[in-house]
Length: 461
Image 1 (cartoon, rainbow, N blue to C red):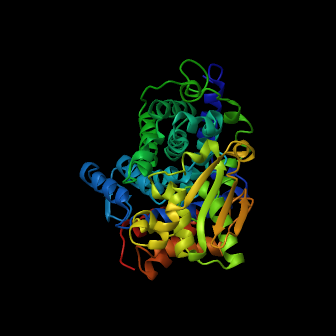
Image 2 (image 1 turned 60 degrees about the horizontal axis):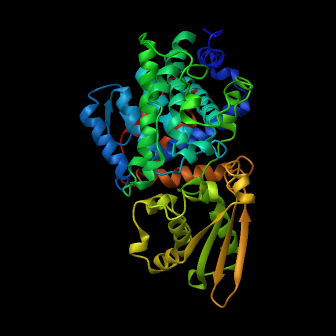
């Protein structure tokens, strides 16, 4: 089969033979930090104001039956496919989990919930669960890069969903201990279910956006489970015939699928950890604006208007987007007017009750750059913020790399502080402390069930 399908076969061979121990210690350490951050955000998404989470979990409770996998925040267990769907939706609900800037990808949002659900159902160790996270992120990253995420965006596809299903399939196949031939069929069955449209931007309830990650988690787990049963599948979806590459891209390049495969782990090491709960395209802008506000000691009343210059190729995602977490005309005014940006601000429209937010929102514009910034996108989300002040003064600040990127990492104490802050919105201090220790020690745990037990229910803080 490898002779007929060298690319698909090479990916299947890596997945079938993969163990966490073959990954360099530095990669394992960064995976631990990124997963720690992702699980804290995942737990916080069980907050009752997060409508997508509440509704998808209610759906899973009705249709998922009884099973071995925890529904996060619900005190209930269902089958692993339903748990992957529901918890994967929670994984992206807050838009606050780690992301991959270069690949425009949110792999942990789908891979972590699926790995936890399968590990709980199969009785796998914490080390095996973490290994599944690593291999899943790596495969998702390589698929996104092969398809070209900028091209996917241009065609209206969502890279996190389209590539994410392959990452979850790899993660699940690893946990199921599938052989090489079955791993190839997992990839093929994932390809048949690969989907995800940026049309979620037109859902004002913002339920469809995180559903994309739940869909990728559900479909990837389904692919591996079926392959494990011997279900038939195409075995050369990256090599010949009707390939994934031709289906989703006009400029696809298969090289990233196998270049240094098994020797390079950029799918993990290039993840960025978010300091802000919003689309990552706006993070450099928030850094730039914060720098101006702190340096100049400006009050909200001093600001007459805000302009964001951003790459044309990504501007459609942030310019007037009806989703608050993707809208420059909402995110930037909220930070300027209130001095912070909470994930709960995505679920309550502050323009309706805060006069300064409403005023600044009406005075915020996006200028679409077709030159330097556009050429740099998506490798970096370069931007320039301009604040026009009362009295005619104008202040500008440019940022290329946001805080939290590997080139500008957040200190560990900031990451731990973020974990405790978001988790405390749904649990008391005792549960938060126990959860923090369980997540941080996941790689050494005999199984994941002590962690999933803490994730299963929420308490009022």
